[in-house]
Length: 398
Ligand SMILES: Cc1ncc(COP(=O)(O)O)c(C=O)c1O
Image (cartoon, rainbow, N blue to C red; front, side, top):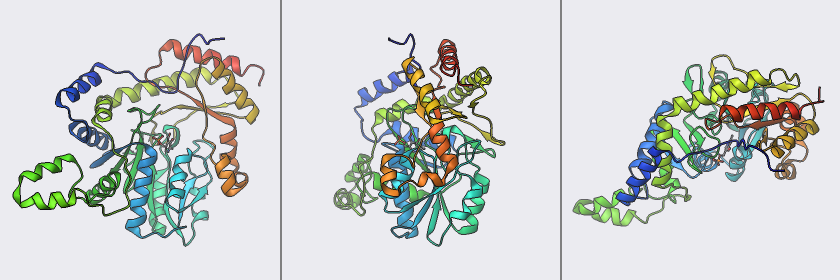
């Protein structure tokens, strides 16, 4: 049976502003790094109170590049340890493995599902180098406490903000609590560009290092085709010709085109509205689902401003109940995802065996949680439909 409605976890529209930007690209014929990317990076950084933003192909590549830079900069050795939450999207800890570092998992909090600051210190060893707080489900982590622990033990923080564009804690934006922070602009994010990710920093040199690594590890003297303009200057001609093909580091090819910048820019300008719509949708869902006693619905952490990438629901019950609810929703056109089980993923089981047993809260949330969309493209009728299907799905469970 075809569902009467579809409620996706994210959506997108080619608005008149985006179309007008594309038209400018067609006219100027500028496709590689140019004014749209530059402005998108600057504005995205500004809404998080950072000086520099660097756009790249995904949140994962942003995390990978940032971690590689921090590893080199601080001279971390292979197998040095990075603290990551025991519940997150696989990319957070995959990049640690890619960089030949060791992810050490930290138990999460019951209420908000992110890394529990009170469980960090028990995991610190002489090999610990960094903490990676992941602002999950749009809720900023308890950054003041995490920053205090990092300072006490001389650890670096690398924020994974891939699920929390525009969130705030203690009146300070996520992404501004660590020397480098990483964002995603993939499906469901407040700002969507098809694929995409950003690295933010206040440090000019880290920004240059990032641009170098995204472009094959090129010499910093030649990072975009604008550097070709220097060919007209006799004093710089020789240097540019030489440096254009000089690779000083083991880099990646993670650059974006003007099109993604042109898509993202109008959304950054509209971020307050996007966030407000999502918060209002979440409020509607919370109030209409609060009569379901087996649901743990999102709540507000004191001093935090949530930025919903998705709407998380945990069932106080079993994995079987979660699966039954999410299959029912999917059959009725409501898209769902599980709440990010990490350590039970086949690859992680292959690496570490059954370690998820050591993290009972993360395991329970991974087994019994799911999320749906609450984005700005949902109409009141979509929300009404989702609310009624969810009530149907849990009938007889309590
Ligand atoms: C917490 C977290 N980190 C990293 C990523 C990776 O982002 P991307 O899909 O843009 O590579 C995601 C993606 O959803 C995520 O949720």
